[in-house]
Image (cartoon, one colour):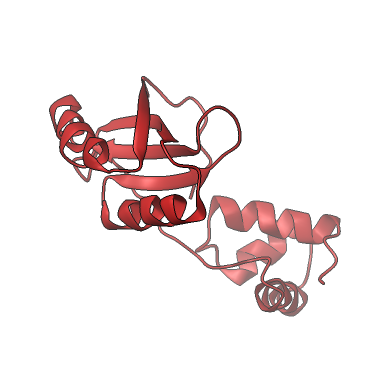
Length: 150
C-alpha cells in the first residue's frame, strides 16, 4: 500500500483538477524535481490510487442539458433483482451514474438527457418498464455550484 503523505496529496489534488498537467509543471506546483514527481505519480498509478485519466465532458455542449438525480426502489430485495436492475442501467446511455445506497430505496441514479421531454421518455419507456422497479422519485438539478466529478 502506498503511503499518502502531504506531497502525494498535493499531487493527487493537482491531477484531479487537471489530469493532463505536464510532469514538469506538476513537479513545480508540488515542490519536487521532475524525476521525483514522476516516480511518485507512477507509484500512485501502480498502487491503484490513480485508476485512470478522463476527459471532463460538458453536458450542454453534448446536447445533454437536463440532469436529474433519481432514486429507485425495487419491489424485490434479492441479489438477482439487483443484478438485473444493474445490467439494465449499463444499457442506458442516459444513466451517467448508478449507486447502490442504503435507506428507504436501493439506488441513486444521475440521469442526463437533452431536455425534460426526453427525460420523461426515459422515465416512462425505459426505467418505468423494468419489472424490478417499484418506486421512482426524480430530483431535477437546477444548478451545480460545486461539481468535482471528473
